[in-house]
Length: 170
Image (cartoon, rainbow, N blue to C red; front, side, top):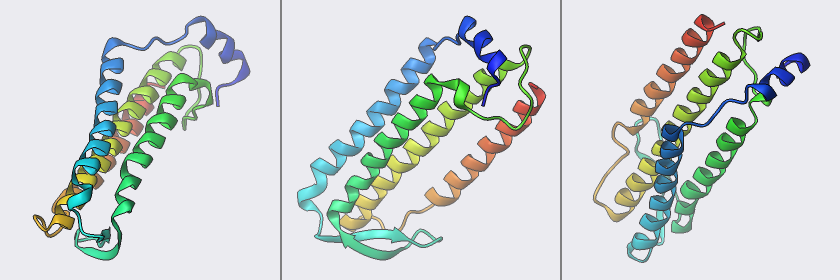
């Protein structure tokens, strides 16, 4: 949380949202819409029971009704909203180092970039899981393939980047 004396400074210097950030958010919204459209277009052709859970090798090990597919876009909408809210109110974000007038705007910019990339990775992951789950249910795929290790590595790389760069920006 931002100390009280820095809140006034933050109000004066209000960080701006760039055109790139707006475009990226629009792309993220398209991913969410794509999930809804994909489910809608495939829903009738899917079997009533589909894979709903996967083991670490990406193989189905749990099954349920096909309505569970809507969990992907619902979680995506929730994440989009929460991350957008965090971006709008940076004073409530927490960083593991001391904030000062000198580093406040740099740190907020860094956290917001981190959140934007994290939101993208998570929304892309949910979209790809939605696609792959539909393909597995239709019988055209057998497992998630490299989705799990790829997303795990992407998340770990992003977290490492956040801490290394954030430490340097203090």
